Length: 140
Image (cartoon, rainbow, N blue to C red; front, side, top):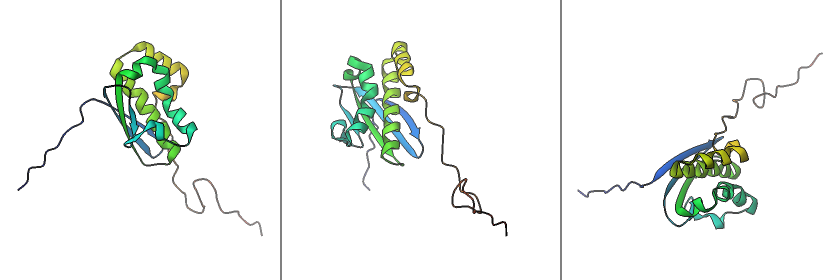
C-alpha cells in the first residue's frame, strides 16, 4: 500500500464571498507575487478587472511587496470572482501585517474590501418566471 503524503500550505488564510463566488487567499512571506487560480495577476483580462483586483495592493503600497499571495476562486461569474478575490487579498494583507492604519485606509477607500456582500439571489416563486415577475392577470 502506498503512503500518500499530504502537504498543507503554510501561511495565513483569508476568505471572501460575493454572490456564488468564493475566494480563499493564502499569504506568506515573499517578493510580492500574486496568483489567482494559478495564473499571474498580470495575465488577468479584461484590464479593468485586473485593476479592480489590484486596488488593495496599491493601497497597501510597500507592505504588499513583502508577501506572496495565492488566491483560489470558485463559483459565480468573472466579476464575482474579481470582487471576492479583491476582498480576500485585502483581508489577507490585514491579517499578515496586523496594521490598524491599513485597516482604516481600506475602510475609508471602500468598505467592501473588508465586508462580504451578504446579498444572494432570491429563489423563484410559483406563478412566475422569476423571483418577482408574475403572469399578467386578465380582467375578462
